[in-house]
Amino acid sequence: RSDEYVALVTGPMLDACAPHAKWIDVFCETGAFTVAQSRRVLEAGMARGLAPRVHASQLGPGDGVRLAVDLGAASIDHGTYLTDADIDALAQSSTVLTLLPGVEFSTRQPYPDARRLIDAGVTVALACDTNPGSSFTSSMPFCIAIAVRDMGMTPAEAVWAATAGGARALRRDDVGIIAPGARADLVLLDAPTRVHLAYRPGVPLVRQVWKDGTTVV
Image 1: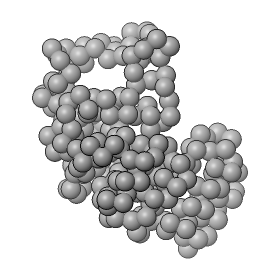
Image 2 (image 1 turned 90 degrees about the vertical axis):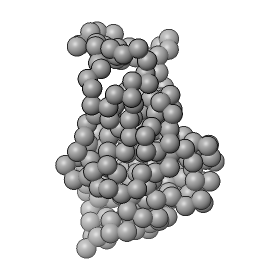
Image 3 (image 1 turned 60 degrees about the vertical axis):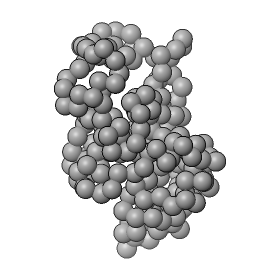
Image 4 (image 1 turned 90 degrees about the horizontal axis):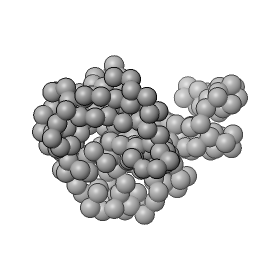
């Protein structure tokens, strides 16, 4: 009854949610929603002023990446199984690929080759995807460590992907960076260098936290 559910999502459910939301998201995957169904969901949301996002290529290769790029999605989550054509399409688009190392750690799927993606010109972000089904961690330092050890990223690339890359996936320029006019959301590490985020996984390194310029920890 997936078509009936899509009709519910794009009709009464969207009517109720759209005034309170910014994004429209869909899981385009074998066993979830087809490309045609995913397009219906995304285009219905876009018609209501919502920006598209897509979960794709987590369980195997598919056409979700091309759909996301065609519709100008802000980001694609997962990207565990990507074809050369997927990577070329992403590299020529403004769509961010958000990698989720905690998922592969929890599900024992292969880690995406971030080195290949970055070298091809794809904008990469990192996130935890904390959930009880496929990613059991909320530790960004842990995800950074995995990205460096198992996905081919340098520490600098991993930190950028976890901060500025995440901001780009949200199409925001006021967070994820330290710059005049940005929000003063800052973390001070008790470490000699950012490299220790990857070098010492599991070790608490946070000394102080600021939110909107106010010390909270």
